[in-house]
Length: 229
Image (cartoon, rainbow, N blue to C red; front, side, top):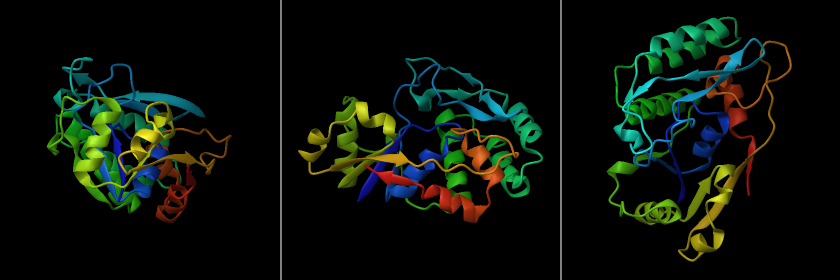
């Protein structure tokens, strides 16, 4: 069984969903520390032909808090207005914007649950289906850290193959996984530009950008543009 484990993020980039596409089961890693200044509550959209950062405001956020102990602030409506302003003339706005609207206007105030709902909604829009778990619901040893905690989750769920994004190459050791009977692989995204507003392609933006410019058929093709290494 192929497994991925990732912290929940605000409208993460395409490769996050390529990772979900590649596995049989996905774990939302909600019981690890919130990283201040990281990307859990912010991302890039396209604004005036370049990256523009959007940030979901939070409360009770500190490096000592778990992601599932942080609360969402009150700027979701403003984020929605910003996204509408920049993408109103995008080619797939009519189909894509209601997805973003539904996510940002939800009433959930717990950050982990808010982001989890967003990930599930985008997966539904993209046609992605896999077994879904929340890390804090699992019966693992929570005193474990880093690679050992990931291995414990793999063993609890019966994973035989753990897949991660490229950034995990510095965190995980193939020999350690192999010693537990688990194959370790990483997503290697391919360069797959798509038409934005007719200008030079701006890569590495939020999934918002992908669904605003691509219909379901094209999104399916983009989700498959990766190798496992």
